Length: 307
Image 1 (cartoon, rainbow, N blue to C red):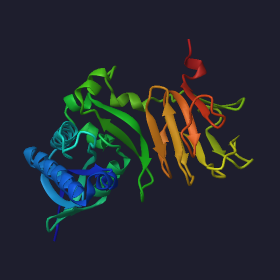
Image 2 (image 1 turned 90 degrees about the vertical axis):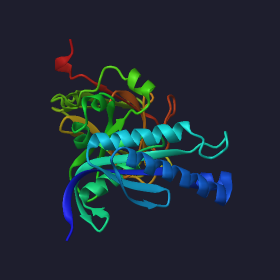
Image 3 (image 1 turned 180 degrees about the vertical axis):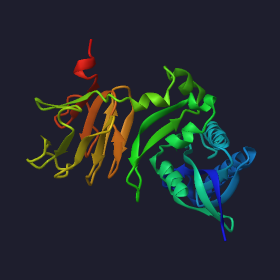
Image 4 (image 1 turned 30 degrees about the horizontal axis):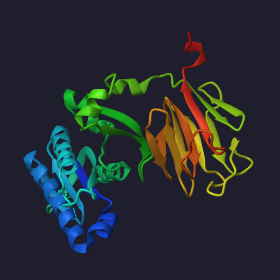
């Protein structure tokens, strides 16, 4: 019989293994991946973690606390980012990390359960050099770590109805220093979502709590915003006012690209993301200012709250 525990689960894997094999050859790539795996295992042990298993270029570990998990994850990123694991200056290696704290079933040196699946999903949401975690995990972090996280979106997990907020841990000192003001998790729960304004080809659609709450985008004529393009699905994406935030839901083959004006980029395919600030939405391809297929969006205060 297995036992149940509350643990922080971390998945860390090497990004772009295929490119490493193309650049370094079979032997060089295998050695590079192995060096990275050993580095990740060493950081795990250093911060009271236990390596559960390694699968190719991925390491799965558990930790007694959320802080231990994030400390180890930060060390992994720093050591691999700053080190030369390939032996060549023109070929760099990077990892991505996902983390979640929750209940797991421990059986014969392995772990199972929903929390494991969520942690693994956080890894799939991460880009090279990122540490992605959940809101519940952030709430268990010390103040020092809570002060250097930022919400970057939401995701719907397979087999679950509720969305999970995604948070990035800013492990690089310069990133954390430039993040002003401090992120307050409670600020993401404002009762007033404001209004979302969409502009495309002279058309303007305004979404707000007392008005339009759902908009479809795609190439079919019966969409609220019709956009013709060979990479655009009939019903490509929906934007919905979900409680206190505007969420874009991709339903397409080629995905949806969201580019915020502050430089943040999000790619969504058969998944969801929260819209914030101002920027562009591209259906099936990256959008840029002036492109005929780009949808402009801006999140604005509600009219009744405007001075």
